[in-house]
Image 1 (spheres, rainbow over the protein chains, first blue to last red):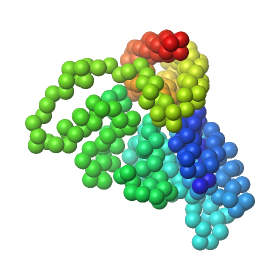
Image 2 (cartoon, helix red, strand yellow; image 1 turned 90 degrees about the vertical axis):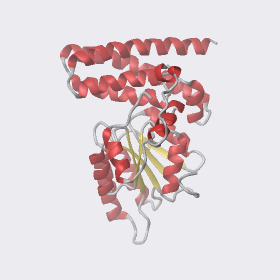
Image 3 (cartoon, each protein chain N blue to C red; image 1 turned 135 degrees about the vertical axis):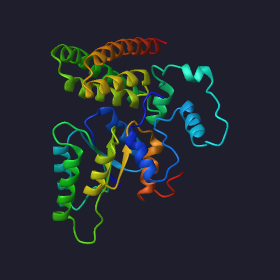
Image 4 (cartoon, rainbow over the protein chains, first blue to last red; image 1 turned 60 degrees about the horizontal axis):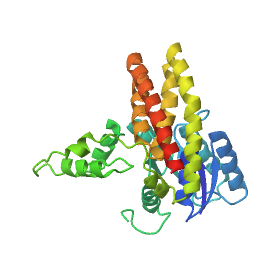
Length: 136
Length: 167
């Protein structure tokens, strides 16, 4: 599995990388601009990311904008019948309106900060990225 | 529990027909509280005084190590980075308080809240949450009190961590 972790907070980035260590190769970035470049390059190289952890609240470009642009890039570059990336928003606010808006804009799920590793595993199982029922 | 989910999380839980919300990181006292709330027919029992009155821990290093895959080197590096970051942020927030710039305070408090919670430094996280809330609601006097409390708790935390490192 190929994962992209986007968060301006070093601690959160590192925690997610460690959570994903047994399952995936993680690429880390601290802002949305760099994330979009990496995302596009991966698609152009036919090695797209399977999973994206995207922080909702970042300086410069917010997670919602990054999400929207990623889905737009996929429309341009993702070959037909290929699966789009699973995008999981990472949020400390969990405001209903914002979460609903992100779901409408094409994110697959969200996790609330601060999280623990089992929380990430459960979300991955729920989205079919790890085997087993989410309640494990 | 030092961080409570906003009302909106409960709204989401209602929508999903969940019985209750258990906000992570999970603490034993909170599980008991949620279980009691989810069983309205049972006789409510008062929490033990030690649980009800226990202040949040400065930091739970064992738990932090576990959450970071028992990689102590990385955890200790992240703690040092976090301390350096907060040492830069506190004077900025103090100046912002003097300037009446509550947005700068809110942003920095939000970052400290998240970083400290991820490192299990729940006392600091709780104070950062109080500061973030006061700044968002433009309660300047409360924000000033919360900032002073955050500074005190952070000082305690760094002193405690230094002691742990010496031991």
